[in-house]
Length: 405
Ligand SMILES: [Mg+2]
Image (cartoon, rainbow, N blue to C red; front, top):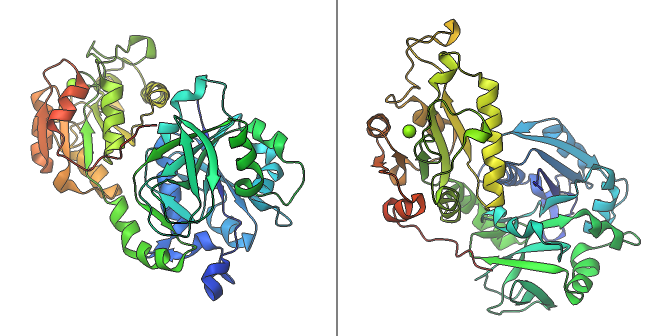
């Protein structure tokens, strides 16, 4: 099973922010010059999902006007508006017909920077109804705390300072959760999660990462600088053929892919370490008429699904279909996009908040190293073997999100 949908709760009224949210829904408040929700949507769009559903209530008009029908990085956005406030779980039952069998759910007024796909690997187990991302290392007395035993959540503890993690507001949910919503209003946090924990139906995944709750005035102030800083990260630019999969000449179908040892784990490692991961691949097979761009897209979508099973994702696949001696006329041209040109790397740099200083390229050929040099980033030539080992050796050290259950 593949997770394709994310659902965001944007209906909350920001009572703790007072006058600020009288006319604007809390998730639309400006943080670092952009609506807070834009950062959340940007994050959600990174994980290879296809659809995002915004569940709106308070001042829903602005949410509908700004987001309904938009597409962000492959995510198509829809908005469902509730007529009367039904609580965080009630909002879900209101949207029941639009929900997938398994979906991500996240709060529209808090941000937790971690690899969402860490929650996916136990998807083949049927012993849970909901998984929570837990934030470790959050200080202060304003959050309830979560007690775990192994990967299972056993209890929710009252607000207070503690070394225990907190609920970070990002969930992986099975739709059967809806069976438990008997009447509205119904709160996910108060009415649904505690009994689920008591029955052993809740898994927790704890990580360290930036956590910002804009419903709290201190965090709202901190977010003004912290959010733009958080999304500015170094990138790993990875060649595809010869790095992620064996270079078996004009590979263009899933049955032709032989993954390099450690490739999926290497990408997961880079995701957990907070790198953006971009694939940068010459696909002259398009210019030579061996396959079409549509096949390149569907192969990359397939690779993304395979990666999801391993808790990993590629932020974007960039490919160059051109070749100066191509057989197909519209692809017959020289292009700066084609490696050894730096065009694909520079295109990503211009469209994403990439910190080029800590970025690097891994490729198996000289043209990859030339492209990296021309783009002004480090290049590491992969000689074959295990890609995870290679990445661990060559990626500049960053504080990792320890991703243990
Ligand atoms: Mg290659």
